[in-house]
Length: 174
Image 1 (cartoon, rainbow, N blue to C red):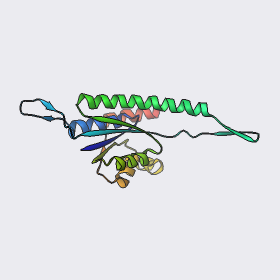
Image 2 (image 1 turned 90 degrees about the horizontal axis):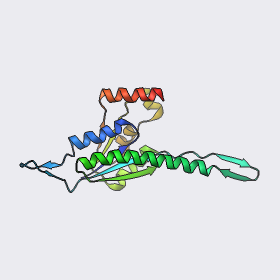
Image 3 (image 1 turned 45 degrees about the vertical axis):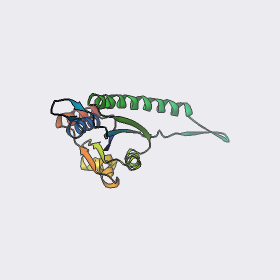
Image 4 (image 1 turned 60 degrees about the horizontal axis):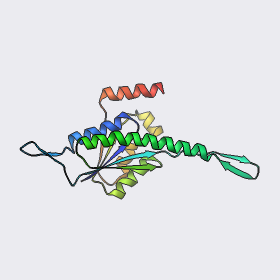
């Protein structure tokens, strides 16, 4: 079985991973209570960085781009991805689940769907940020897009109310 979990900076995505690990992907336990790792199980951890828009400054007949700024943004995004993957891999290793990290660049909803199709996963798991109807209409929803465009079953994991309230409070402060 191959499972893909979409991750971002939110606590909701890590909660989705923890939920699917503890409720669906638990290692098998024999009658003597020893754990046996499911050898056929592979979890793909996917994080998508949104490309930084470059700005072009005309200087006479030659056009210069801000490549140093672009490179520093990419490095910062890669560091954020590394932190996300470290937390997610830790969850998988604690539960004796084989995992592979995939870092992509582009539109998250399109990249996740493409990766799920390319890896031929059996299940795609995404967290729900709990956007209201109006925000979802204007901003779009990765989970909604994936549910309608990916070829495999999609599991959307809603965070518990306490976690959703905490995430909303953090977003308001930002």
